[in-house]
Image 1: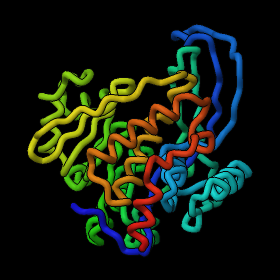
Image 2: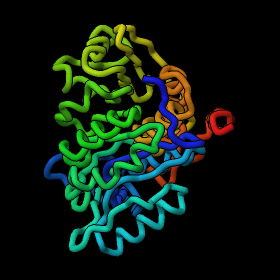
Image 3: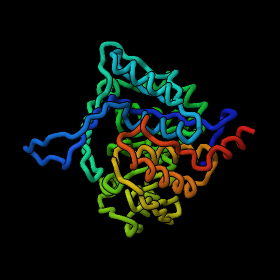
Image 4: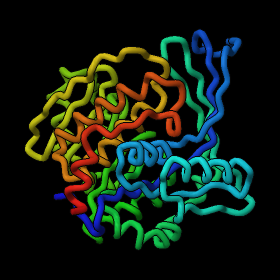
Length: 315
């Protein structure tokens, strides 16, 4: 599917989770039953959809976030932070008597992490809410969804985008059964673990081209992220291409690298770039994101040659 432009400038709608994140720095991730002493604490905006929307905005492309927070102080702070990051929050819901989603993230000295998420308001989003987002989805160039809200809600949004001719990126993270959404994904984005779960076969590194080629029967196109090894791209012909990642100058925190990837990928596709060129931009952005602690509002600017393309479309 070619990029769909319903407005004067490219615009990406992102539907999904919005959380209040607490980062704890530790020298090493604890083993089961082990207590470790933290060496740093950071509270920040998070959630995959929020991070991805900010990554779109950091690329210089219009981003609108569709989701829900609670009617608590955390929710008010997150909405303010998103607006300050140039994300359109006009469609965000404030649900009464429901807390805002939370995530606890442990990050070790090597930049690796473990994450526990409590959905709260995110888990209360329904297909009825998606119906209220219909006009915003219809006016988008690209819709992005993930797996942090209920599958039924996500599928409803993807079907709405399909009705309106809007290209959809499905980020299957966390892994779950998104049923009818997968064949409509263009692309379906997974990491190695998620790809292995979906295909029932191990996906490990750039040498997994034969296994990754099977994704051509699952979605319109697919991208498997490989961390420091970049990403693999496959289209419906089954042809697999490898896009290596540049070497990271410093690894501080890998949290949010996948979200930076997806956000910049969406921005690049919305600007009319091919999937392979968009993935190359996204790999660069993911590498840049791991040089800072935290995600979302702590992302650097990702305007990787997209501004001129955006202005050309607008003109």
